[in-house]
Length: 455
Image (cartoon, rainbow, N blue to C red; front, side, top):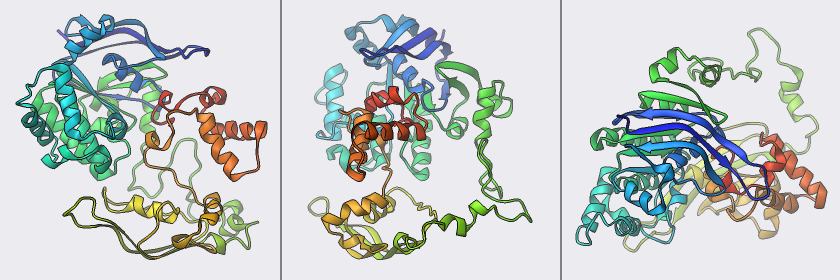
Protein backbone atom coordinates (compact mmCIF):
# COMPACT_ATOMS: atom_id res chain seq x y z
CA UNK A 1 0.00 0.00 0.00
CA UNK A 2 1.28 3.46 -0.93
CA UNK A 3 2.02 5.94 1.84
CA UNK A 4 0.64 8.79 -0.30
CA UNK A 5 -1.89 8.49 -3.12
CA UNK A 6 -2.92 11.60 -5.03
CA UNK A 7 -5.75 11.30 -7.55
CA UNK A 8 -7.01 13.94 -9.99
CA UNK A 9 -5.94 16.77 -7.68
CA UNK A 10 -6.75 20.30 -8.83
CA UNK A 11 -5.86 23.52 -7.03
CA UNK A 12 -7.10 26.95 -8.09
CA UNK A 13 -6.34 30.49 -7.03
CA UNK A 14 -9.58 32.43 -6.67
CA UNK A 15 -8.75 35.98 -5.52
CA UNK A 16 -11.71 38.19 -4.73
CA UNK A 17 -12.84 40.16 -7.74
CA UNK A 18 -10.41 38.43 -10.13
CA UNK A 19 -10.71 35.45 -12.49
CA UNK A 20 -9.94 32.01 -11.08
CA UNK A 21 -6.47 30.79 -12.07
CA UNK A 22 -5.82 27.01 -12.22
CA UNK A 23 -2.44 26.19 -10.62
CA UNK A 24 -2.60 22.38 -10.41
CA UNK A 25 -4.67 20.44 -12.93
CA UNK A 26 -5.69 16.80 -12.51
CA UNK A 27 -2.47 15.57 -10.91
CA UNK A 28 -2.18 11.89 -9.91
CA UNK A 29 0.76 9.96 -8.43
CA UNK A 30 1.71 7.45 -5.71
CA UNK A 31 4.58 7.48 -3.21
CA UNK A 32 5.80 4.33 -1.48
CA UNK A 33 7.27 4.34 2.02
CA UNK A 34 10.96 5.32 1.90
CA UNK A 35 10.96 6.82 -1.61
CA UNK A 36 12.90 10.01 -2.38
CA UNK A 37 11.18 11.77 -5.29
CA UNK A 38 12.03 15.00 -7.08
CA UNK A 39 9.44 17.46 -8.40
CA UNK A 40 10.89 19.84 -10.99
CA UNK A 41 9.62 22.56 -13.28
CA UNK A 42 10.09 26.23 -14.05
CA UNK A 43 8.78 29.07 -11.88
CA UNK A 44 5.00 29.18 -11.88
CA UNK A 45 4.58 25.56 -12.97
CA UNK A 46 2.64 24.69 -9.79
CA UNK A 47 5.37 22.83 -7.85
CA UNK A 48 5.09 24.72 -4.58
CA UNK A 49 1.29 24.88 -4.81
CA UNK A 50 1.21 21.08 -5.14
CA UNK A 51 3.53 20.71 -2.14
CA UNK A 52 1.36 23.02 -0.05
CA UNK A 53 -1.78 21.18 -1.12
CA UNK A 54 -0.59 17.68 -0.21
CA UNK A 55 0.50 18.92 3.23
CA UNK A 56 -2.72 20.95 3.61
CA UNK A 57 -0.83 24.21 4.08
CA UNK A 58 -2.28 26.06 1.09
CA UNK A 59 -4.10 29.21 2.19
CA UNK A 60 -6.64 31.49 0.51
CA UNK A 61 -6.97 32.45 -2.25
CA UNK A 62 -5.73 28.92 -3.04
CA UNK A 63 -8.38 26.20 -2.81
CA UNK A 64 -8.54 22.50 -3.61
CA UNK A 65 -10.90 22.32 -6.56
CA UNK A 66 -11.19 18.55 -6.77
CA UNK A 67 -9.53 15.19 -6.31
CA UNK A 68 -8.26 13.29 -3.28
CA UNK A 69 -5.09 13.13 -1.17
CA UNK A 70 -4.85 9.80 0.65
CA UNK A 71 -2.17 9.70 3.35
CA UNK A 72 -1.87 6.17 4.71
CA UNK A 73 -5.46 5.57 3.59
CA UNK A 74 -6.98 8.77 5.06
CA UNK A 75 -8.24 11.46 2.72
CA UNK A 76 -6.57 14.49 4.31
CA UNK A 77 -8.23 16.81 1.76
CA UNK A 78 -11.49 16.26 3.66
CA UNK A 79 -10.13 16.58 7.21
CA UNK A 80 -11.04 19.35 9.67
CA UNK A 81 -8.37 21.52 11.31
CA UNK A 82 -8.37 19.31 14.40
CA UNK A 83 -8.15 16.17 12.31
CA UNK A 84 -5.16 17.65 10.45
CA UNK A 85 -3.40 18.48 13.71
CA UNK A 86 -3.53 14.86 14.83
CA UNK A 87 -2.30 13.69 11.41
CA UNK A 88 0.70 16.03 11.32
CA UNK A 89 2.33 14.56 14.41
CA UNK A 90 3.91 11.37 13.11
CA UNK A 91 2.44 12.04 9.66
CA UNK A 92 3.69 14.73 7.31
CA UNK A 93 5.60 18.01 7.42
CA UNK A 94 6.94 20.61 5.03
CA UNK A 95 10.20 22.55 4.99
CA UNK A 96 9.27 25.88 3.36
CA UNK A 97 11.24 27.74 0.75
CA UNK A 98 12.74 30.52 2.87
CA UNK A 99 14.01 29.88 6.37
CA UNK A 100 13.89 33.55 7.31
CA UNK A 101 10.25 33.94 6.37
CA UNK A 102 9.06 30.75 8.04
CA UNK A 103 10.63 31.64 11.39
CA UNK A 104 9.33 34.25 13.83
CA UNK A 105 12.06 36.94 14.00
CA UNK A 106 11.28 37.88 17.64
CA UNK A 107 11.43 34.34 19.05
CA UNK A 108 14.49 32.19 19.61
CA UNK A 109 14.97 28.83 17.94
CA UNK A 110 14.24 27.22 21.33
CA UNK A 111 10.89 29.05 21.45
CA UNK A 112 9.97 27.63 18.03
CA UNK A 113 10.58 24.07 19.26
CA UNK A 114 8.59 24.65 22.43
CA UNK A 115 5.67 26.07 20.44
CA UNK A 116 5.50 22.83 18.41
CA UNK A 117 5.84 20.63 21.49
CA UNK A 118 3.02 22.49 23.26
CA UNK A 119 0.73 22.44 20.20
CA UNK A 120 1.03 18.70 19.64
CA UNK A 121 1.67 17.51 23.18
CA UNK A 122 4.04 14.73 22.14
CA UNK A 123 6.99 15.91 24.28
CA UNK A 124 6.70 16.44 28.02
CA UNK A 125 7.76 19.70 29.67
CA UNK A 126 10.65 17.87 31.37
CA UNK A 127 11.98 16.49 28.07
CA UNK A 128 11.56 19.54 25.84
CA UNK A 129 15.05 21.00 26.14
CA UNK A 130 16.78 17.64 25.66
CA UNK A 131 14.61 16.86 22.62
CA UNK A 132 15.39 20.26 21.09
CA UNK A 133 19.12 19.64 21.62
CA UNK A 134 18.82 16.24 19.93
CA UNK A 135 17.03 17.73 16.92
CA UNK A 136 19.53 20.53 16.27
CA UNK A 137 22.28 17.94 16.59
CA UNK A 138 20.64 15.82 13.87
CA UNK A 139 20.98 18.74 11.41
CA UNK A 140 24.57 19.43 12.51
CA UNK A 141 23.90 22.67 14.37
CA UNK A 142 25.53 23.58 17.70
CA UNK A 143 23.31 23.62 20.77
CA UNK A 144 24.00 27.37 21.13
CA UNK A 145 21.63 28.15 18.20
CA UNK A 146 18.70 27.38 20.50
CA UNK A 147 19.23 30.73 22.22
CA UNK A 148 19.67 32.72 19.00
CA UNK A 149 17.11 34.60 16.95
CA UNK A 150 16.61 33.83 13.23
CA UNK A 151 18.29 37.10 12.22
CA UNK A 152 21.47 36.01 14.01
CA UNK A 153 21.82 32.86 11.90
CA UNK A 154 23.30 32.46 8.42
CA UNK A 155 21.05 31.32 5.58
CA UNK A 156 22.32 27.76 5.79
CA UNK A 157 21.82 27.63 9.55
CA UNK A 158 18.27 28.95 9.22
CA UNK A 159 17.49 26.29 6.64
CA UNK A 160 18.87 23.58 8.92
CA UNK A 161 16.80 24.98 11.80
CA UNK A 162 13.59 24.73 9.74
CA UNK A 163 14.48 21.11 8.87
CA UNK A 164 14.99 20.34 12.57
CA UNK A 165 11.63 21.93 13.42
CA UNK A 166 9.90 19.78 10.78
CA UNK A 167 11.65 16.68 12.17
CA UNK A 168 10.24 17.47 15.63
CA UNK A 169 6.89 16.11 14.41
CA UNK A 170 8.53 12.74 13.63
CA UNK A 171 6.96 12.73 10.15
CA UNK A 172 6.80 9.81 7.75
CA UNK A 173 6.54 12.20 4.78
CA UNK A 174 8.72 15.30 4.38
CA UNK A 175 8.21 17.85 1.59
CA UNK A 176 11.25 20.09 0.94
CA UNK A 177 10.30 23.19 -1.04
CA UNK A 178 13.41 24.66 -2.71
CA UNK A 179 15.54 24.04 0.41
CA UNK A 180 18.69 25.52 -1.15
CA UNK A 181 17.19 28.79 -2.46
CA UNK A 182 19.47 31.83 -1.80
CA UNK A 183 22.29 29.59 -0.48
CA UNK A 184 25.75 29.53 -2.05
CA UNK A 185 26.99 26.39 -3.78
CA UNK A 186 29.04 25.03 -0.87
CA UNK A 187 26.19 25.52 1.60
CA UNK A 188 23.73 24.00 -0.91
CA UNK A 189 25.85 20.85 -1.08
CA UNK A 190 26.11 20.64 2.70
CA UNK A 191 22.35 21.10 3.22
CA UNK A 192 21.52 18.51 0.56
CA UNK A 193 23.99 16.05 2.10
CA UNK A 194 22.25 16.53 5.46
CA UNK A 195 18.83 15.93 3.88
CA UNK A 196 20.04 12.73 2.19
CA UNK A 197 21.57 11.47 5.43
CA UNK A 198 18.42 12.25 7.42
CA UNK A 199 16.16 10.56 4.88
CA UNK A 200 18.14 7.36 5.36
CA UNK A 201 18.57 7.56 9.14
CA UNK A 202 15.03 8.73 9.96
CA UNK A 203 13.38 6.52 7.30
CA UNK A 204 10.93 9.11 6.01
CA UNK A 205 9.55 9.45 2.49
CA UNK A 206 10.67 12.67 0.83
CA UNK A 207 9.61 14.99 -1.98
CA UNK A 208 12.24 17.48 -3.13
CA UNK A 209 10.72 20.45 -4.97
CA UNK A 210 13.21 22.39 -7.06
CA UNK A 211 13.73 24.25 -10.31
CA UNK A 212 17.32 22.96 -10.30
CA UNK A 213 17.21 19.76 -12.32
CA UNK A 214 20.87 19.06 -11.54
CA UNK A 215 20.31 18.92 -7.77
CA UNK A 216 17.20 16.77 -8.20
CA UNK A 217 18.87 14.25 -10.53
CA UNK A 218 21.84 13.96 -8.18
CA UNK A 219 19.73 13.53 -5.04
CA UNK A 220 16.55 11.60 -5.86
CA UNK A 221 15.67 8.17 -7.23
CA UNK A 222 12.63 9.28 -9.22
CA UNK A 223 11.63 12.56 -10.86
CA UNK A 224 8.23 14.05 -11.66
CA UNK A 225 8.35 16.89 -14.18
CA UNK A 226 5.68 19.56 -13.82
CA UNK A 227 4.59 21.99 -16.54
CA UNK A 228 1.63 24.40 -16.48
CA UNK A 229 0.05 22.65 -13.50
CA UNK A 230 0.36 19.10 -14.86
CA UNK A 231 2.84 16.27 -14.31
CA UNK A 232 4.04 15.63 -17.84
CA UNK A 233 6.64 12.96 -17.03
CA UNK A 234 7.25 10.60 -14.11
CA UNK A 235 10.25 8.27 -14.36
CA UNK A 236 13.40 7.05 -12.57
CA UNK A 237 16.06 9.77 -12.35
CA UNK A 238 18.44 7.86 -14.62
CA UNK A 239 15.79 7.58 -17.35
CA UNK A 240 14.95 11.28 -17.08
CA UNK A 241 18.62 12.07 -17.66
CA UNK A 242 19.31 9.59 -20.45
CA UNK A 243 15.92 8.92 -22.09
CA UNK A 244 13.54 11.85 -21.49
CA UNK A 245 10.19 11.23 -23.16
CA UNK A 246 8.34 14.55 -22.99
CA UNK A 247 9.38 17.58 -25.06
CA UNK A 248 9.32 19.83 -22.00
CA UNK A 249 11.71 17.52 -20.11
CA UNK A 250 14.07 17.55 -23.08
CA UNK A 251 13.90 21.35 -23.10
CA UNK A 252 14.81 21.51 -19.40
CA UNK A 253 17.79 19.23 -19.97
CA UNK A 254 18.94 21.26 -22.97
CA UNK A 255 19.38 24.33 -20.76
CA UNK A 256 22.14 22.70 -18.73
CA UNK A 257 25.40 23.40 -20.55
CA UNK A 258 28.78 21.91 -19.70
CA UNK A 259 30.76 24.62 -17.83
CA UNK A 260 34.01 23.02 -19.01
CA UNK A 261 33.16 23.63 -22.67
CA UNK A 262 34.75 26.55 -24.52
CA UNK A 263 31.31 27.79 -25.56
CA UNK A 264 28.08 27.20 -23.65
CA UNK A 265 24.96 27.82 -25.72
CA UNK A 266 21.48 28.49 -24.42
CA UNK A 267 18.54 27.82 -26.75
CA UNK A 268 17.11 31.08 -28.04
CA UNK A 269 20.23 33.14 -27.28
CA UNK A 270 22.99 34.02 -29.68
CA UNK A 271 26.45 32.80 -28.74
CA UNK A 272 28.57 35.51 -27.14
CA UNK A 273 31.78 34.06 -28.60
CA UNK A 274 32.39 34.59 -32.36
CA UNK A 275 33.40 31.69 -34.53
CA UNK A 276 37.12 31.23 -35.13
CA UNK A 277 38.46 33.60 -37.78
CA UNK A 278 35.37 35.78 -37.84
CA UNK A 279 35.46 39.49 -37.11
CA UNK A 280 33.42 40.78 -34.22
CA UNK A 281 30.10 42.30 -35.14
CA UNK A 282 30.15 46.09 -35.12
CA UNK A 283 27.45 46.39 -32.47
CA UNK A 284 29.36 44.07 -30.09
CA UNK A 285 32.72 45.85 -30.33
CA UNK A 286 34.07 47.91 -27.41
CA UNK A 287 33.86 51.04 -29.51
CA UNK A 288 30.20 50.46 -30.29
CA UNK A 289 29.42 49.65 -26.69
CA UNK A 290 30.79 53.00 -25.61
CA UNK A 291 29.17 54.87 -28.50
CA UNK A 292 27.13 57.79 -27.27
CA UNK A 293 28.64 57.48 -23.81
CA UNK A 294 31.82 59.54 -24.27
CA UNK A 295 32.42 61.71 -21.26
CA UNK A 296 30.63 59.21 -18.98
CA UNK A 297 33.14 56.37 -19.14
CA UNK A 298 35.29 57.77 -16.35
CA UNK A 299 32.19 58.42 -14.26
CA UNK A 300 31.21 54.78 -14.47
CA UNK A 301 34.49 53.27 -13.31
CA UNK A 302 34.24 51.59 -9.89
CA UNK A 303 37.42 51.60 -7.81
CA UNK A 304 37.55 49.68 -4.52
CA UNK A 305 40.78 50.31 -2.66
CA UNK A 306 41.94 48.55 0.56
CA UNK A 307 38.39 48.24 1.90
CA UNK A 308 37.69 46.59 5.25
CA UNK A 309 34.49 46.21 7.23
CA UNK A 310 34.46 45.25 10.91
CA UNK A 311 31.20 44.72 12.78
CA UNK A 312 31.09 45.28 16.56
CA UNK A 313 31.02 42.12 18.67
CA UNK A 314 27.51 40.62 18.39
CA UNK A 315 27.39 39.49 22.01
CA UNK A 316 29.29 40.26 25.20
CA UNK A 317 32.47 38.23 25.37
CA UNK A 318 32.63 37.62 21.61
CA UNK A 319 35.17 39.11 19.23
CA UNK A 320 34.29 41.73 16.60
CA UNK A 321 33.52 40.24 13.18
CA UNK A 322 35.90 41.19 10.36
CA UNK A 323 33.60 40.63 7.37
CA UNK A 324 35.84 42.24 4.71
CA UNK A 325 39.60 42.54 5.03
CA UNK A 326 41.69 44.81 2.76
CA UNK A 327 39.83 44.15 -0.51
CA UNK A 328 40.79 45.99 -3.72
CA UNK A 329 39.51 45.73 -7.29
CA UNK A 330 38.62 47.90 -10.28
CA UNK A 331 35.58 47.51 -12.56
CA UNK A 332 35.70 49.29 -15.90
CA UNK A 333 32.60 50.46 -17.87
CA UNK A 334 30.90 47.55 -19.63
CA UNK A 335 32.74 44.89 -17.63
CA UNK A 336 31.02 42.14 -15.66
CA UNK A 337 32.63 40.48 -12.68
CA UNK A 338 31.68 37.50 -10.52
CA UNK A 339 32.32 37.56 -6.79
CA UNK A 340 32.26 34.01 -5.40
CA UNK A 341 33.02 32.44 -2.04
CA UNK A 342 31.63 30.36 0.78
CA UNK A 343 28.81 31.55 3.03
CA UNK A 344 30.14 34.21 5.40
CA UNK A 345 33.13 35.09 3.22
CA UNK A 346 32.01 38.71 2.83
CA UNK A 347 30.45 38.74 -0.65
CA UNK A 348 27.17 40.37 0.33
CA UNK A 349 28.96 42.82 2.61
CA UNK A 350 31.06 44.05 -0.32
CA UNK A 351 27.88 44.51 -2.38
CA UNK A 352 26.31 46.56 0.43
CA UNK A 353 29.45 48.69 0.70
CA UNK A 354 29.68 49.57 -3.00
CA UNK A 355 25.96 50.44 -3.15
CA UNK A 356 26.20 52.72 -0.12
CA UNK A 357 23.91 50.59 2.02
CA UNK A 358 26.72 50.27 4.57
CA UNK A 359 29.96 52.19 5.13
CA UNK A 360 33.42 50.62 5.29
CA UNK A 361 35.56 50.70 8.42
CA UNK A 362 38.63 51.50 6.30
CA UNK A 363 39.55 52.08 2.66
CA UNK A 364 37.89 53.95 -0.18
CA UNK A 365 35.18 53.25 -2.77
CA UNK A 366 34.93 55.58 -5.75
CA UNK A 367 32.27 55.51 -8.45
CA UNK A 368 32.96 58.20 -11.01
CA UNK A 369 33.20 61.45 -9.07
CA UNK A 370 31.43 60.06 -5.99
CA UNK A 371 33.26 58.87 -2.88
CA UNK A 372 30.82 56.11 -1.91
CA UNK A 373 32.63 55.38 1.38
CA UNK A 374 32.05 58.96 2.56
CA UNK A 375 28.91 59.80 0.61
CA UNK A 376 26.57 62.49 1.88
CA UNK A 377 22.87 61.84 2.25
CA UNK A 378 21.97 64.34 -0.49
CA UNK A 379 24.17 62.42 -2.98
CA UNK A 380 22.64 59.01 -2.27
CA UNK A 381 19.86 59.46 -4.82
CA UNK A 382 22.40 60.30 -7.53
CA UNK A 383 24.39 57.17 -6.64
CA UNK A 384 21.35 54.92 -6.56
CA UNK A 385 20.18 56.22 -9.92
CA UNK A 386 23.36 54.62 -11.34
CA UNK A 387 24.13 51.79 -8.89
CA UNK A 388 21.47 49.26 -7.88
CA UNK A 389 21.42 45.89 -6.16
CA UNK A 390 19.25 42.79 -6.54
CA UNK A 391 19.04 41.41 -3.03
CA UNK A 392 19.66 37.79 -2.11
CA UNK A 393 16.21 36.92 -0.80
CA UNK A 394 13.13 38.39 -2.51
CA UNK A 395 10.97 37.36 0.45
CA UNK A 396 12.70 39.90 2.68
CA UNK A 397 13.29 42.51 -0.05
CA UNK A 398 9.61 42.94 -0.98
CA UNK A 399 7.05 44.49 1.36
CA UNK A 400 4.44 41.77 1.96
CA UNK A 401 1.68 44.33 2.56
CA UNK A 402 1.86 46.04 -0.83
CA UNK A 403 1.06 44.99 -4.38
CA UNK A 404 3.73 44.52 -7.03
CA UNK A 405 2.50 47.68 -8.76
CA UNK A 406 2.89 49.78 -5.62
CA UNK A 407 6.35 48.33 -4.89
CA UNK A 408 7.59 49.16 -8.40
CA UNK A 409 5.92 52.57 -8.51
CA UNK A 410 8.00 53.78 -5.55
CA UNK A 411 11.40 53.67 -7.34
CA UNK A 412 9.82 55.01 -10.55
CA UNK A 413 8.65 58.05 -8.56
CA UNK A 414 11.95 58.35 -6.69
CA UNK A 415 14.26 58.22 -9.71
CA UNK A 416 12.23 59.72 -12.56
CA UNK A 417 9.79 62.53 -13.27
CA UNK A 418 7.05 60.08 -14.32
CA UNK A 419 3.74 60.35 -12.53
CA UNK A 420 0.19 59.08 -12.90
CA UNK A 421 -0.54 57.05 -16.05
CA UNK A 422 3.01 57.55 -17.34
CA UNK A 423 4.43 55.97 -14.18
CA UNK A 424 1.98 53.09 -14.42
CA UNK A 425 2.92 52.44 -18.05
CA UNK A 426 6.57 52.30 -16.99
CA UNK A 427 5.75 49.80 -14.23
CA UNK A 428 3.87 47.54 -16.67
CA UNK A 429 6.74 47.85 -19.14
CA UNK A 430 9.18 46.70 -16.47
CA UNK A 431 7.02 43.68 -15.66
CA UNK A 432 6.90 42.77 -19.34
CA UNK A 433 10.69 43.16 -19.60
CA UNK A 434 11.25 40.44 -16.99
CA UNK A 435 8.60 38.15 -18.47
CA UNK A 436 5.83 38.64 -15.91
CA UNK A 437 2.78 38.67 -18.15
CA UNK A 438 -0.11 39.26 -18.33
CA UNK A 439 1.29 42.40 -16.73
CA UNK A 440 -2.02 43.68 -15.35
CA UNK A 441 -2.53 40.44 -13.47
CA UNK A 442 0.94 40.42 -11.92
CA UNK A 443 0.78 44.12 -11.04
CA UNK A 444 -2.21 43.47 -8.77
CA UNK A 445 -0.62 40.58 -6.85
CA UNK A 446 0.96 40.63 -3.40
CA UNK A 447 4.47 39.12 -3.07
CA UNK A 448 3.21 35.95 -1.35
CA UNK A 449 0.94 35.27 -4.35
CA UNK A 450 3.97 34.86 -6.63
CA UNK A 451 6.16 31.81 -7.05
CA UNK A 452 9.77 31.97 -5.91
CA UNK A 453 11.09 32.67 -9.40
CA UNK A 454 8.43 35.29 -10.04
CA UNK A 455 9.41 37.10 -6.86
